[in-house]
Every structure is written in structure tokens, then in C-alpha cells.
Image 1 (tube, rainbow, N blue to C red):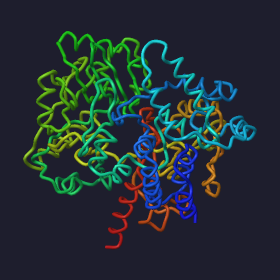
Image 2 (cartoon, rainbow, N blue to C red):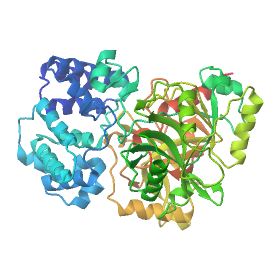
Image 3 (cartoon, rainbow, N blue to C red):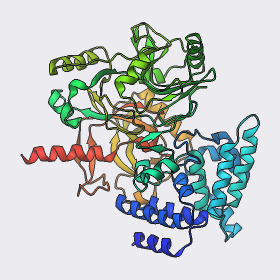
Image 4 (cartoon, rainbow, N blue to C red):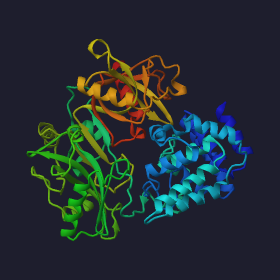
Length: 568
């Protein structure tokens, strides 16, 4: 019913205001079925084209303002946005920072619009031009000017919905459940090139602005005693000839994108956030290295690892340490995206590999500021299997297998990671108080997956924590503003004692997937809920956003495989 109401709204309301756009986004976000989401968006695009704002509408959906699609870093820093919101709605800036993820739920903002009684909404074309002006500002003193311009836009909003999607745009996270790939599917090749700035999956690159990284599929054993065989990996890798693939160690570190231009270094994390200041000493050392070795403008895809007496520390230990001088931190380069004024996306991996090998030394057991990964090719299954076993013996996570193909930002098609355990990234939803000696602090946690604008509970976890860790987590979460149960989870059977803000991701190890009446999910392939069995806390993932949790489809596929085996 909601779907048809939205389509009626699309047909009878003129696409000319921000309010119309906000209402459509709200409808798409609330809808759980992907097919209906896509239908709503497709219909909206037709109206947008009719009123000559299609390009702006698409850019607003993808949180971009120009043809450098996905390359622009946050034009409005968080502290500037906090301040603008606080001043506009007369709020305490500390409250704004605590409620940043749910800013439109602050009661003062609701009351502001109730008393405002503003009927007219700003024209969408005018609104988008103002956004472009904010993003175009640069140079000294521009942040004060940006804050004033953001305040002006906030004051021109006529309702709470408009504020919600304006803030999400400025945060570069629209979160309505439409992926970039879904939006692209509605455009022809010329529109992709003209509006999004790329063709056939290729994007323009600007050194100094981050690009979505290429990702990897995950191959994991179905049982602890399963054999890792060439046949299973070939099947997972779409039956490709593995003899033409490259095999590499998978290091347990933090992924960083390294940009060097005009004698300056910038570091960006997996979620495209800048990390230069966080690792300022490492950035300084990289700058000295690049200048000393006469580097041109370059973008490198790397893993940051930590050495300790010739050994590489696990990611969790690296997170728990503070590096004032970064003497233990090192970068391992495994790809190159830009070099000598050339975008290298169109070159196969073997070609890109030759370029970074000619620039850097190979990795050793001694710390270097930056080195390159070592790749291997194998002719038979035993060589591949021995390489995997050696990786585990050396204390690494597993191995990576890469096809000799072009670099595809955001794609998972051509890289495969083979790990010793089944891992999944889950969002922390809430906490339960413990029993016995743990009754004074949180002893277990509700975890879930964010998908299509909703959070789906998947598991309750209480193992893998030391008492010290539980006390630390309790103090951290209870010192924050307590979150609330999303309306669509009101009927969830196992309500946590405390709901959190749902903006943190944990990596969890588990044994298998099973049917569960407690954890319902929205999926057309299942008539039951599913959960992960024996989940254990592995580590926190501050480098990941909630949108990078899951995905649910991986668990559905795993469950269906187990179901087929049981039937035979």
C-alpha cells in the first residue's frame, strides 16, 4: 500500500522542491523490498528529467556535486557542521556531537519546525546550486564561510525531513538503501559519463581526493576440518583458471590509500575518511621518502602494518597502541591507481604490478616506511595449499587471490580472500547486563546488519571478551547518550537492556549459519530468520561504517548451501 501511495505522490506532485525530494527519499528508505525501492527511484528519475533536474537529483542521491564522482572528500568538516547545526537550532554543541547519527530526532529541532509553520520549500535547483557553492570554497578562512552557508541552508529547510537529507548529504552518507550500482543501472553509457564522470566502470581521478577501493569476495571453510582445495576456490572464483591468478599474503592491518601530490602526502581510510593527522609521523616519513626518491604524483593502495621485533602485530594490538613517532608502522603497497599523470584503472594487474615494483623495495621482516607486496603464481594445487598453510604458520590472516584484470572501484568480482575462520562485520545495536560477577556491567551485546535503510538483528554475543574489555565497553557506551529502539524493531523478542547509537562495527568470528525464529530478516529466498552460531568477538572495526556490515546475502547463501547438504 505504501508503494502505491508513493507512486501516486510522484505522479501528482511537481518535482521542483527539496521537500518533494526528501519525501521520496523517506519513502525509499522506509521500503524494505529492493524491487519497490528501485521502482520508486526510477519513477522519480522520470519526473526529475521532465523538470530538468535529473543530474542534480542523481548527484544528491550519491552525495556528489560535480563530475568527480565519489572523489570529493567531506567538504564540510564535522566540527563545522556541528557548530552550524547548534547555532541554527539553538542547541548545545555537545548534544549535537552525541546525536550526530540521529540529528533529526533532537526534540528542539522538531519543536523548531512546529513553531515555524513554513509552507514553502526551496526549489531543488536553487538548493543544489547553493550546495555546489559550499563545495567549491577553498583556501584560508573558508571554514567560517562554509559554516555561515550551511546555517543559511538549514534555515531555508521547511521541515525535519529536509534537514535530515541535507545533513546526510554533507556527511556523504545518504543511507536510503540504494547502492551506487543500483543508481547506475538506470543510466545509459552517455549519462554515466556525463553525470557521474566515468565510463564503462572507469572514474576520473584527482590526486588528493579518495576513490572507492576495490574489494574482495570472501572464501571461508564451511567446517573447521574442511580442506582448502583448488576445486572449491575455482568454483567460488567463477571457475577461472587459477594458474593465471596472483597469490599474495593477506596482512592483518589497516587499509590506507596514499596520495602524493605537490610535495604533500594524504592518507585515506577504507571509508574515504582522511587519516593524515592521525598518522602524522608516518605521513611525514612517507613525504621524505617520496621526495628523496623523486616520486611524481601517485596514488597507492596499501595495508598499514605494525612491526615489533621483526614480527607483525595483529590489527587489534595495533589499534590498542599509541604511536607518537610511528617507528613501528609500515605500509605494504599492493596496487597503484595513478602514476606519471596517468590513471591506471584500465591496465591489468600484472601491468600495474610492474609499475609499483619499479618504485618500491619488496617487503622483508625488517620495518621499512613503505614496501611492496610479493606476488606468486602456482601451477598445481599443492603449491597453492602450501602457500596458504605457510601464511597461517607465519601468523597471517590468510591469502589473497587476484585475477589479472583492471582495477574496479567498489567491485568484489576479481579478488578473493581465503581466511582460516569465518568472519563477518556486524553493527553493535545494544547491550545486556551480565550475571554473577558481571552483573555490574554489560555482559553481552546484540549485533546486526545494516541493509536497505534498516538494521537486522543477527546474533547475541557474550564470548571473546576479557573482564577488562567488558568494563571498558560498559564505560564507553554508558557514558554516551543512550540510543533508542528503531520503530520497526519494537516487536523484536529479545530486546536489549540498553540500545546504543548503532554507529560502530565489530568483526565477529562464527562457526556456521542456522535458522532462527528470533532473528527475522527480509529476504525473498528464505521463509525463516537466520543467525550465526557460536559468535565470538574478534575486534572492533573503527575503519568501517555500518553500511559495510554483512552483507545479509552472504549468510543467506551459506544457509542455503547447508540446507542442500542436509536434503541429500
